[in-house]
Image 1 (spheres, rainbow, N blue to C red):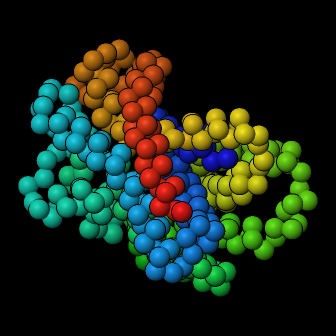
Image 2 (spheres, one colour; image 1 turned 180 degrees about the horizontal axis):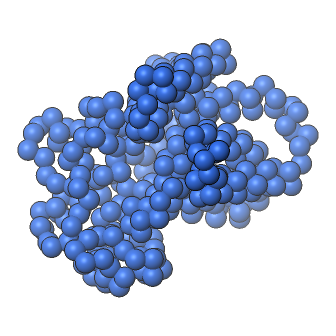
Image 3 (cartoon, helix red, strand yellow; image 1 turned 135 degrees about the vertical axis):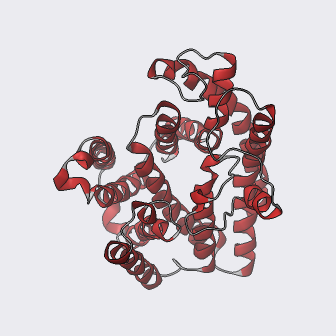
Length: 337
């Protein structure tokens, strides 16, 4: 039951990047990392297993999941850059003049401890995929194979945050740096182990309770991001409060039972999450070029009054990417067999 959640989180990113609505974006990316930590640990245990064959199948599936859609958006972004219109693009969107950077843009593996510092990134949001790929690799090697390993990983991740406060007090190193992603990923893996250890007790909890917990925890996730994080007493702890709320939301949604119709709808909406996350800068350019209602002069940024037509264009654009992903899912299903 994570589909709608993933797409909502992707839209939070869009609200900042296209409409200059701040705050929720940073929390949304950390939420994505926590969810990935849980799901990658779950599928390594339940689908692939920690052996050579499982490792190969896991990575074949990850490549089919991440790269076909990315390559489509990358090619379209290169075309936009080459068009050289009067519309100002994201500052990271320009053509590379080095083989090394082309390699980084093609693979989404940016050679910096803070990946978003690398420019150009022709698909600007692809920096977060570097963080994702690093921890996919560690999980596939077995960093979360046992509860003890996961606990050590979690404690080391917490120690890193303590270190940054003591010796390198920059927000960047607690958000977009690769080691900063370790904490949400480790917390996500810990959701798996707590679920595993307390499975019998969890079965006694009613479905209505999971509905309430998921809605309340996600509501407070949003309130904390929008309001509480601006209060001096909460400001320094807002990100950690939201990681705990994300932890609770993921745990409750995983245990939430729905009928086939609800699950199908959830999956259908969730299929738009990754295409939206990757393509919204390109769609912003396309919107200004074709429609430009509510556009800001010389920019891909938009006024809030443009939100409805922009979102319609965004979902229409992403539909072929969803179909492409569906085709890849068919191939992935055969690989799993």
